[in-house]
Length: 257
Image 1: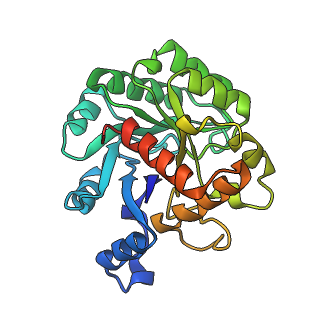
Image 2: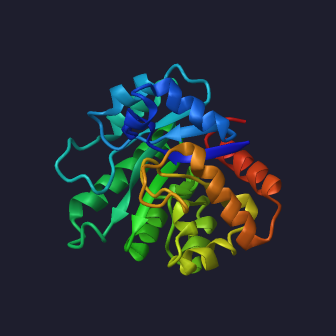
């Protein structure tokens, strides 16, 4: 029983499933994945994404605008809160800072992040945070904007243990993706060993970041099992205990208890 805490079901190419979305869902279910959160990345695609998951009892979604997307409609607190009232919406995001893809550290990215935090606090939902090469600013904004009031998750986390610990102190979970299975990702494995089990989540970020031995191929939420297996191995924990704990953690974070 696995919970993929971060996927993009609406962006998975169905060519490998004979163009049949139900075939994709069956493939995922066959791997023991019984809950998923489909993550919003911009306002214009929200309605189609929401419609895609609305009839699936095992899938929920979020509302937000990804920090890498420069030429899109900017969200407002009011619009994010309006979308948050829709059935199935359980978090605000994906939001955050990405100075790897946006090396000039643009002001609009920080302002967008602040808007999402304000919306999350207004509608009392957790945040889904993307952070890459922006450690200090990410933590500083989370602190200054009092994001600890609602908490959330730092998804697909690849930074160091010190940042993870600081985020946990701010009421955030840390989510590990298929990167933990990559040969050169020893830093991620070292960090992931230290995350308290009660603050750990697993994800695929599918259709990207397919774990080994499928690296380079399109990903899907069923492969979150491989993330869990690698984490159980490196943490020396029984797979069933890690799966149960991460399932409970994600359910608690997203208000699905």
